[in-house]
Length: 585
Image 1: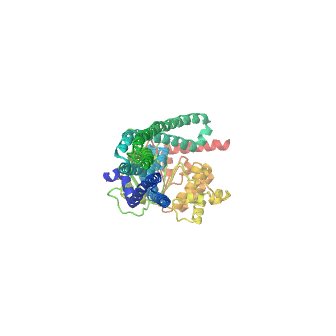
Image 2: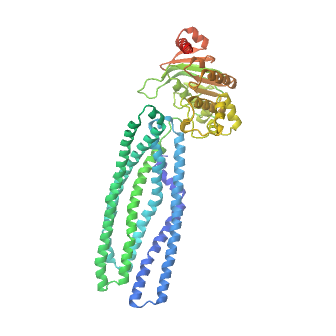
Image 3: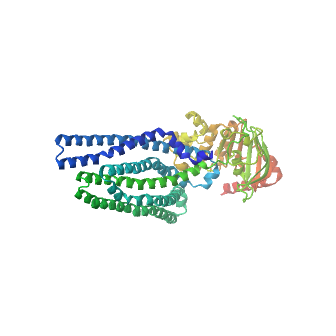
């Protein structure tokens, strides 16, 4: 398993091995054909100079050059199809597989990794890998094979000594390329990190635009963005500066080779050791070595950047989810909704206080449990644990008599409909947002759920009705409309267990009463858990659980808790007084 992870890029390349094999064969044929044009040019020059070539011979050689050119065009077309096509497909599969991997990861991973950084891996890093598997392979192959073929041709067709002397400066490129590759990999890694920070800053600023404007923090945000943007600029310039030094040096080295060829090769041509045509051919061959040298620099850059990107992508693939189906998982397809908490204790980390401490309660199938408590009492933590977004010790939470860790994750979450506090909506139509948990739902099904959530009348007032596009995170809707749309989405799912996490806080009391009445009718024989701050939301619940600092403070029916003269009654009387004062005002 570890070996597979180590070479995970090679597994993708292996799937397209025939593309690469055929591409490299075609590329070799192109490089081989490249050798003939300088030779034919030299033969024409020598033939015309010595008058040993007539017009028919010249036409024949020109026709040969045209054929070689046609072969080069066809070959270059096919190696692009084979190799570039394979690189594009691998990039596509990597992006799909990385997204699928992210879908399996637990909340902890997303809490610890910024959105901007993940987006950079999906874009810039995958592009760098595509360049490694496409252009870099071609550049490296061209640089090595064409160089060998050209040098061999220069030695056999022209002169061995001239070839060796002219190519001595090329050794500097090979040695310098190694150190250049290491440095570019380091600088590229820092560049990607800076770009990730920039992307994250932009994403947060756009998402929090309303908060920024509400607090008049535009200038402060601009200053903060300027600092992040400046760091990104500097890291990009560090990469550019390296290129600015290396690429001119490359030109200098190639120029030195030309000077040697002209001086020493000219001497050989004057003394008659080589013909004028072969001297011209040699310089043409030497010119054809310029591209391999540049290609070598490009391939070193692409390989270095690709390696840095592979490390970042591999970090995602190597990440293991905290929550997964264990070996003791049972073949459970459906749940009824009986919930039992047994000495439930949980802390988000060992160095933090307990979010829940020794909470025990049993919720019968078809009953309604209300959870009350001050902010930070552990209400949301409790329902997060019911969805197994975090793990607890085996047996602390049971559903239908099964430990929650014995229930397949997919079964558990398919049988729970959850309306979170933030009421997240996607940038899509209202119909698709509400039908998100049930893709087979028809428009009639969506309308019925919206009627139960008391949002149907609002939706039909929109010009586009259920086809109304919702802004990012539902920004175009009011708080109450978002809450009721989220409730409709959960009701449409019709799961055995429904969890409403403070999901009626943004609606008026009359609408709240109608929604609760509809819930009572729709949720017969199904379990409902309601987290609320208003006593009016929970007065008709079968049982009320009151949490205080993560501990069970009170538990019983609403009437029983009123008789206790404790937290529940105190909250009830306080809210009644507030309501009375508001009515008097």
